[in-house]
Amino acid sequence: MEKLQKAYEALEILKSLGLPVSSDQMRGIAKMEREYLSEEVIPLLEGELLPLVEKMRTKFQLEVTYSAEDGLDVNLVDRVPKQETLFQNETESRRQKKYNIRVTFPDKHVSYNKMVWETLMEVVRYAGPEKVQELEIIVMGGNLVSSELLENERYRVGQKEVKPGLYVNTYSSTDTKYEQIKKINRSLNLGLIVEKVML
Image (cartoon, rainbow, N blue to C red):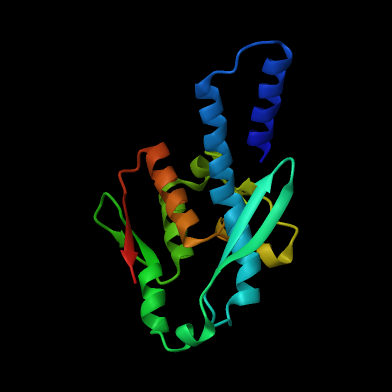
């Protein structure tokens, strides 16, 4: 959020000086907002909501709407009757939506772990934790690779030590980890092949 806040402040400075704001600048801010939502907000929401709803058998859809003027609004927009979900093949339904991550390294070594965070850790080790830290990939308001442990014990358990004094924040969704690995690969030119494997 820190980078996004600085972008907002820069935008206000331009406006106060009467300088034009280009469409490229607005697109850049929109991209930063989308990254913030996908890398920080959504994983946090998933982590908070899942314990509350994971035992439910009813399929439902939530719509989250936010604007600076009206605030936050959460609504139940689609609900499937309970009797339909009781008789559906739940295992098949889950398999259609879930996937794992497979990473092939230049030496043909393949990382494909049951726990996706282990694959992320392998990539960070291969890339070099310090180099990944310099990329400043933000997750839950902090760096993906950090020398500091989170204050909240619930989220701190998701920090895995990659080397003495450096921790990788693995408290995120599979989608987020997939994007993180792709960004590390792209930014550091690692030559990895990063794939989604449906379960």
